[in-house]
Length: 255
Image 1 (cartoon, helix red, strand yellow):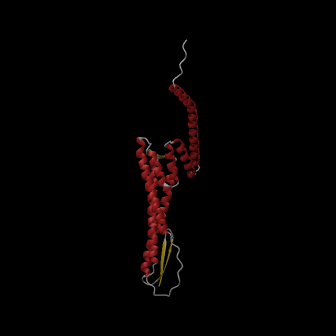
Image 2 (image 1 turned 90 degrees about the vertical axis):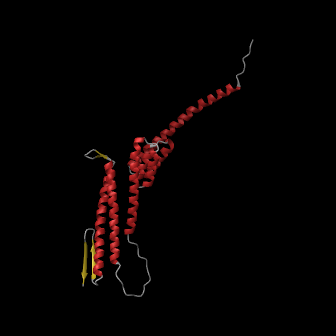
Image 3 (image 1 turned 45 degrees about the horizontal axis):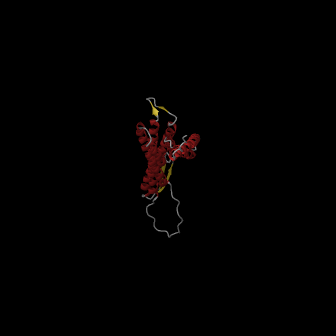
C-alpha cells in the first residue's frame, strides 16, 4: 500500500500567490472604475462652470480630473479657460503640454494658435505700459519757494506728450483689433464666411478695440497739434487758452 507524497513547497507558494492575485484583482478594478467615474464627474462640473463664465473654478475641476485620468484633452480645455481669463502664459503652457499628445495633423494648427496667444500677450503688455504712461501722476506737495523769473511754459510739452501717448494707445488697440479679427476669420469657413459661435467673442473684441483705437488716435492727434499751436503762440507772449474734446480742439489767443 503506497502513501501520498506531500506537495512541494514551491507549488504551495504558487497556489497562495494565485489566490492572493485573484482576491486583489477585483478590488483594483473597482478602484479604477471609481477613479474614472470621479474624473468624468469633475470634467462635467468643469464644463458647466465654463459655460457659466466661471473659468477659474472650471480650471480647478479640470486640473483635478486630469490628475486622476491623465486624459490630454483636459489640457486643451484648461488652455481655453486660461485664454478667456487673459492669462496667456498659462494658456500657452497648457497647449504646449497638450501638443505632446496631439495627432500629427493637429500640431500645425496648435503652433499657429500658440503664436497668436504670444502676440496677444505682448499686445496686452504694451497696452498696459501705454496706459500707465498716459495716466497723469499725482503731484507731490512742495514747500513754497521765492518767485523767480519764469521761462517757457512746459504746458505745450505736457499736452504733446499726452497726445503721443494717446497715439501709442490707439496703435496698440488697432493692432489688437486686427489680431482679434484674424482670430475670428480663422473660425469662419467658406467664401460667405460662415462663422461658428466661438468667433463671436473675437468679433466683439475686434469692434471694441477698433473703437478705442479710433478715439485714442483722434484724441492723441488733437493734443499733439494743440500742444504745437500752444507752444508757437505762447512764445509770442499772448494769453493763450486751449480747450479740447475727443473730436475737436479750440485754441484761442488774447492780445
